[in-house]
Length: 342
Image 1 (tube, one colour):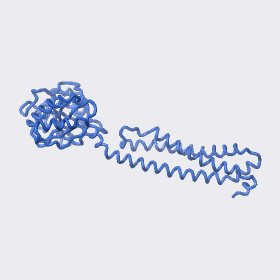
Image 2 (spheres, rainbow, N blue to C red; image 1 turned 180 degrees about the horizontal axis):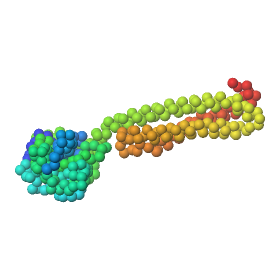
Image 3 (cartoon, helix red, strand yellow; image 1 turned 45 degrees about the horizontal axis):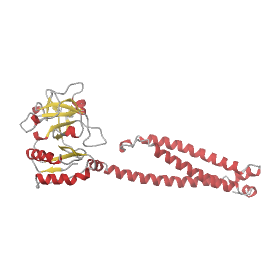
Image 4 (cartoon, rainbow, N blue to C red; image 1 turned 90 degrees about the vertical axis):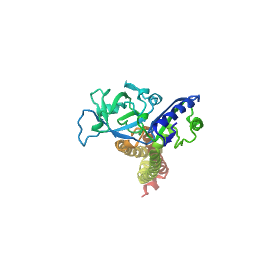
């Protein structure tokens, strides 16, 4: 759950947070309560500069890094493991506490390749490059986009940065929607004047991030279905016309003693060979084009085997019917009539 609070300084938020934790931990399904700004997968990004102490920089150097202000319990609540160093503790609380930060592995790869970042200092600009100490490293975790890889990110104690808004994250066991009422009641009991700007589940946050992709997927499915229908109708007509034109040939074969079943099989075999050649070319083109649309897909491979197999099956079935019925009709025509067919 992600209820949002706006309009409060960090000291007031800290007091509300402590009281919220006490009240919500009494709810049986609540497993953890924490807070951050921005919330995970909320669509918000907070960035700053990352200037390492004692390192020269050019004007063109990219020093940008994402910043997330968190409570000390967030890493454990969100199951983001610490791979080196330590987590935040009570001695990091408050605006007067020494400034500290935890960075993710992407930040280590970007700013400290082949170096040990623990204990190094940095700041938002060269003049303040010794302001913040790195005390820990955590695994990469996506908090802005579920599609892209995690960007360089730093986590800082929220109490060291006064701000007017924070997100509470409540980890629950079972149906998260069932505890919305309990969360609202806990906030009301702590301070009825606190405005809950937004409240949503993590899955709802993810669904919002995919709203545009979902519209595109529905449109692509519709156009793909229409394209398959048009291709099937066109293929049926073309194959029927091609077989009908061979009525004269069928009459000749029947006149010299060919069996009807043999004639039908011959016509269908020759027609399906042409279709299979077209299918091979089409599948090869689809596989080549799949790389171009891979960036638009999430959770799907550009070579979607079931979809390609279904399209191929539809083409083969349509071609078989389009060949069989005209061939059977032609084979039943009197050979003398078929010989005069133009």
